[in-house]
Image (cartoon, rainbow, N blue to C red; front, side, top):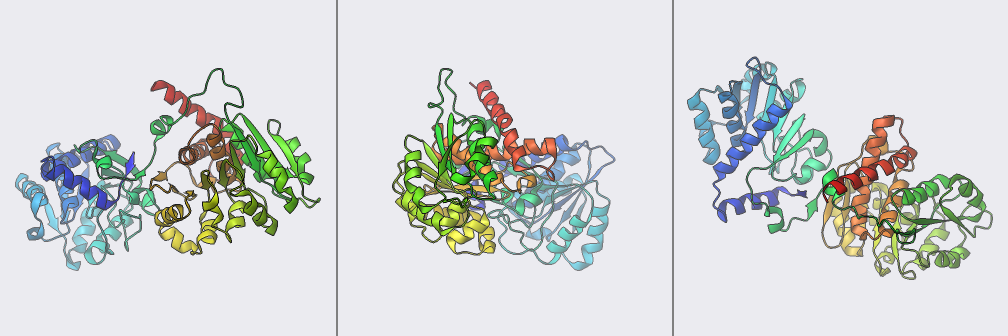
Length: 522
């Protein structure tokens, strides 16, 4: 499913109206009908219920006015709080305001502080509130009467459905523009907007319902939309089939270089996740003095002891061993738990450009190249980096706050500048590639903020690359699978008590579900 910006959505609407001759009021009517259908799917409204529509002066308000009419005609008690002078309502919204008045829907104008008591009274008596104040194009802070009414709504315990986007949320980046409606559900039109998926907008959006309003099916492609997200069916469509007569070499070979004293778990999680994601063979390079630990812990993973001079950390003379280890491998995952020794930077400097396979770089591998970023562009095969915001700050020289403020822009710019695939981990993980595509991952939960979770992700991506997935597709599908496995683990263990091992244990089930869905659609 494509994900659009507000500007792109305006172009889509404009194209439908100007190129295809679809009147704007038809799109508004379709939008209103889809909102009403969603309301009835979520709530069992009766004549005892009272629905309050909050309407602004623009097209979003017009959508809300049309929603009011349909509910009113169905016998629902409806009233409108209009946050504008009636004479300022124009175009299609004006048509719907005039109809609402003619059919007898109560309209209360709230335009100044003296009107606040009226708004508070009507909102307190509501059983459902429909937010249609601002749409996705909001670009300035919410102030004055609008802010006061939004604060009133947020203080009630009445369910709220937002039309297109919660009022006060920036549709481009999900920022709160001063104050914003906290919706229980949001009905958006055509495509999800970035602001629905990026935090804090995602939290304010509640349940997101994407509905069709009669736009041409090629709308997103026609304007060159680069953003997308996946649901389970879409993820399943990306799954590669497995040969019934395939051997382990055919399903891919993963080399992992990971672990150090006190960090053997990172190595184990990465290696086993690569196997659990479908790779046929995984070889783990580990500091030699720790090898017995991993041999005891991992039954199915092959190990290769690497020189460490008895310290538990890779020694600089291990390079030849690593180069020999990756011969005939399909991908190298390097970094988890290696430690922050200067030796790691030197090893990485000598690996990049000297091996002819894809690299997945994470954790201490990212720290190891932070002083020599140009290494990334020297590699001739795809490179996937999987930083969290702290690691991204070290790579870019930006502050964590700057990255959190613009995760998409920062990831895009880094990807294009260095020619790598960037998977920036977060509550909404973003995956960017040099060609411009942006994936917004919505699977996962707060229980995945636990030690070792990122190591599992690195292993999943590596395992998928080994099986022949393009590196970007592996990063996208890997993020989805990682989050889906995390959701399964949370359902079993609860978010507070789950561990990275629980995510790993749920990975085969997550993968099995996608394979079964894929087979249904063959």
